[in-house]
Length: 181
Image 1 (cartoon, rainbow, N blue to C red):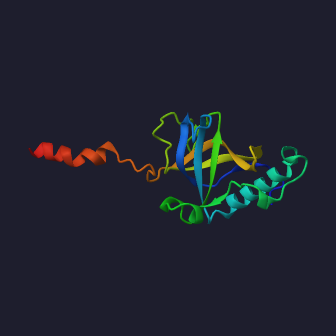
Image 2: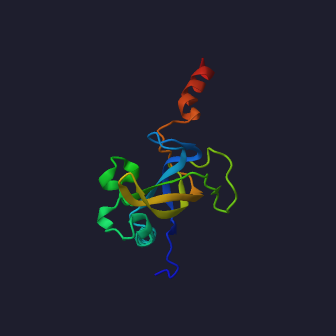
Image 3: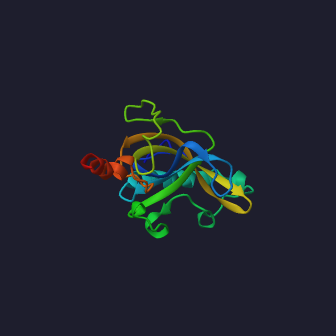
């Protein structure tokens, strides 16, 4: 077990979905934030255990947010969710997920820690490591542990989850038809 227990977790290799990491967006009328859904394979026991440990620590440290009492875990909204149970989406099968957000932009780097500036390089579907921080919230009767988005390290490309096709895919046959006409 890691002796440096923290509410900060650096994931193993995960998949990004709903990646709003370049421009902040408002979700359901909230203030604009950078956000991403982090899809964690259920086989990544190390990351899942670290997230559970960080959530437990955030609960333990949350007494000030909850009137001086440490709440029962079952009474809180928790960030680690089961993709098989909550999403009808192939990308979430056999995985857990957390939704992370931040008011400030994440730093985004490649495998060699070089900054990525090309906005097409990091997208929903690519694989990355992500730094996450877990903290308590108590707002308008909602109590729980939230997940803050830190930084992103792109590891490799993956099939886009946006459902959008590339221009090459859309027009490749048209170019051939024009050539033959």
